Length: 388
Image (cartoon, rainbow, N blue to C red; front, side):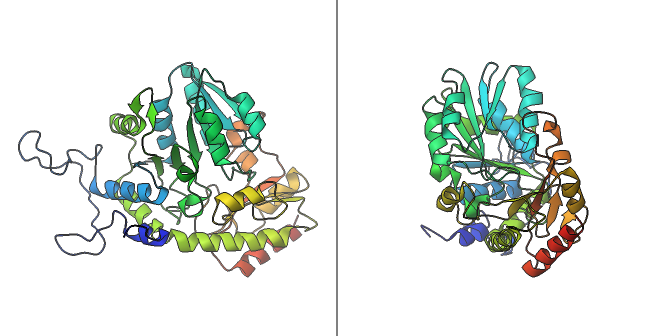
């Protein structure tokens, strides 16, 4: 098939039936090593599980197909993938430009692990193209790191426009596509060079598997070398690979990604619209709302608007009270599972930037809207707001 539907790709890419038994679902390869046909005679390139595993390879084939990438790499966690990617690109004295409300763990990784190594870091509102242009350093910016929608304030970045600015100085554009998933947004087709995911979230989809992914576009080079080759070497040399069961669970989750994202998005749209104007809610951050400053842009570069909403309440006490008053929206970190979660970012997911210019307002809560019945979810939120 030359141009299969997304759902067809999600179910079949890298998932041919087992040729030995005809099993529709390929087996999980629980092995650490592979017999060689004589010294150095690797069967299909397999030697040792850190270097390659058929189950992990199947996931990587699937991830590359979903994002339209050249090569994909599956890691033990999202941050393990980000760390490997950044070290494949950066050297001491290089500069990284990130959004000013990126996931706290991504900022912490650069600020606490790479800045002491000699990398410099700046943050900017990525939705403000003039500000992005003014913060790019022509002589040293090597990575422009984008989250869109951003975590947790749901800012929308023009991927194509930022890519044009970054490429003018030879910088690599990385898009964290975790919130949108490849079903809703295709950053590589918009000009990005690399896509990263916490596969723990929407790709896995069931809050039962930890993982990360790096997908590199075709022909991307760093200092004259293939970026994909550099990532592959570091993945092998450092070893933060996903295990076979984690890879298999992620594959299983991806098979239903399209139908889940449709439901996440429709539930979130309904909830966001219903909460606008609620007397206890000061502001609803959701790009599907017509008055969201990034609404038109999001409508152009996304299939729909996703399952993430943030709410601004009157003050810190009100936000904390709501976060501790709902039943279906369970208080927990993470996102993207079939079940709904609520998070208090200031002291949970973004605690590492508390007290800095990047801190999340203390009156904000973040909702990961699941695929439960929307009336049940809305009733749960309204009951929680009554306690505020």
